[in-house]
Length: 325
Ligand SMILES: NC(=O)c1ccc[n+]([C@@H]2O[C@H](COP(=O)([O-])OP(=O)(O)OC[C@H]3O[C@@H](n4cnc5c(N)ncnc54)[C@H](OP(=O)(O)O)[C@@H]3O)[C@@H](O)[C@H]2O)c1
Image 1 (cartoon, protein in one colour):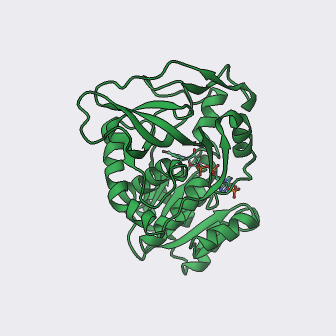
Image 2 (tube, protein in one colour):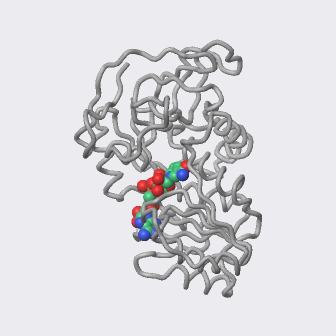
């Protein structure tokens, strides 16, 4: 198979497409003929050498893909060769074939092109598991997502809107401001020009939001807690603003707030499979109905993987970047 390998740690130029042996499905696994793979920020960190794959996972980059089932391992009854699918991977997606536990595979949503389906597994599973299964976002609650023009953010706006929440989103450019509004954010905040705590206060009568999905970590810990209302839930999923922060614990206690953090990649297979089941049941019908759409900035051939990484690093993209295999 063709697969992207990082010849050493470093910039996008360390990525090369090489020929490697095809994977075989272990018991409980399937092999997918990959049609497209999605880029994620974690791939950039893995390439730089600061985010190694979990033990036992492929060294090849790539945490999500779409394609068709090519082979089925012992004990797998739910998939057949030729089924169009997309999958959550612990690694290995930037390749023409990948082996994956059957529970991390989902049918490609009906009505979606198979290339586009590669844009969905990470965002759908991350956003659903965090705002529904972890933070229990309720209809009528106020929800804030940071980076509303990114892959996660553009999906979170749409899902929270469909769940009946009032959606606030921060963005860093006018282009992303327009996208966030178009996707249904009620209040779009330019984080470069406005103080999001102030805007949230202004639009909630000083009450604050109920749930925050945060990509910034340390940098936003204190302002996030100020933007949170009584009983609010902060879920941290990204560390773009660092890992270490100081906090007055009283700010959590006074509001009876919860601060949580999760990573999808490190969850056990059974945990990922449970998320996939809920996503297929609850999110795919919204995708098929056109109520949630994958936001795709660019599709590049696998051979242009270095360019795709440089594009994501530039931060100029809106939504997802895909590699067509
Ligand atoms: N824990 C998990 O399981 C999990 C899973 C998937 C993703 N993630 C994390 O989720 C985050 C988003 O991922 P992604 O795929 O959506 O990446 P992405 O498409 O590159 O989006 C990154 C976003 O960060 C925003 N941003 C940068 N600086 C900001 C600031 N000061 N305030 C608010 N927003 C800011 C950017 O907004 P502008 O471009 O508008 O400036 C952009 O929308 C990443 O940190 C990623 O590692 C975590």
